[in-house]
Structure formats: C-alpha cells, structure tokens
Length: 233
Image (cartoon, rainbow, N blue to C red; front, side, top):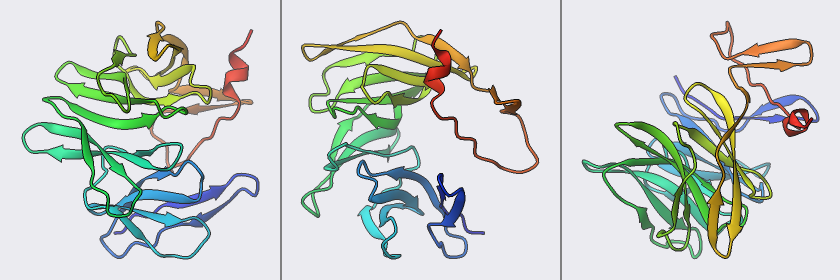
C-alpha cells in the first residue's frame, strides 16, 4: 500500500492529491518552503521537493531520509535535516540549497538524538528536540554559531513552533498541554521565560463541539485559527 500527501484548499474547502507514489512507496512528513512555492517531503530514503501547482516532477534534495523532520530557512538557502549516525542516534545536518550540489555540513553531533528542527523567522536561531534516556526536551541554539544553546522546556516538550514575531516558542508538554515560553533577544543572546500552559491540546472546544485526542472511527485534521485571540482576557 502506498502513502501519499494531499493538499487542502482552505478558502474553497477542497482537497487534492499532491503525490502519486508507486505501489509500496511512501511520501511522508511534508515541509513547506518559506515562499510556499515548493513542498519537500521524504520519499522512501530520499528527501525530494515538488513545485506546488506546476507539474509533477520531483527534484531530489539529499540522499538521506528525513524521518525525524526537516525545515527550511526563511530565505530558502538552507535545509535543516536529521541523519542517523552509526551508534549515536540522530544528528542535525545543514544542507545548503545553493549552489546546486553543495555539500551538507554537520551541525550537531553527540550521544543524544536531535530531531524536529524549526528555524526562527529571523533565521538566527534553530529550535529542536533532544531525546535521551530522561525524555524529550526543547532547546534553541544559534544557527551560524552553534555555541549558544538554551533549554526552553523544563519538564519535557516536543514539536516546537516559533511565533511569527519570534517572541514566543510554542510546544507540547508530555501530557499534551500547549505551552508557550517567551523569547527575548538581547544583543545576540536570548532570555527564555518560564513556560506557561495555554490549553489542553487533548480536548479543545470548537464552537459548540469538542474535538478529542482519543481514538476516532475515521481520521480527520482539525485546524484552529486565531486561537491566540481566545486566550486574551
């Protein structure tokens, strides 16, 4: 059985198939380019990209899988991805996308596993998860100089996402609470606030309905828009 990626048009409320994988092939873990012109994804053991709305050609980006997530810098020049290191879990690599054929460079390497990279809107910082025997925590690190590193979550976290103004980092706690940590950039260094719980992501009220994170009879995707406004007093 093949696995494919679909796109949903929000204004028109229609869905269209984006990939057409061969039998027993998989297209997984899509990631948008910052300009929205391309969608990159893992296809079998390669990360490829495909233009949105312009033909069906697939362009190989790198010959290693991105099963732990990829992200693209806002200027479209870099891709942060994860490679499996022999005997050392997953490590971060940075793949320059210009010029074509540029070699990837190691960004983080160590005994722990790093995953789920997320560039800041300014491109100066990279948020990610570290998985070790104690669990998963969210960190943020300077992109060009990996020497500056800060822990964001304090009691576990995953799935970090930047706010558009880069003043907050959102992530999920182990008990599925949506958390937010303030981020203040002070002369090239960050001040990370104590994470605050926003809402329970397992059961979220939507109008007069409730969407639960439990098992359902058929898969569904629920999109919550402008949820920050609902948190204001």
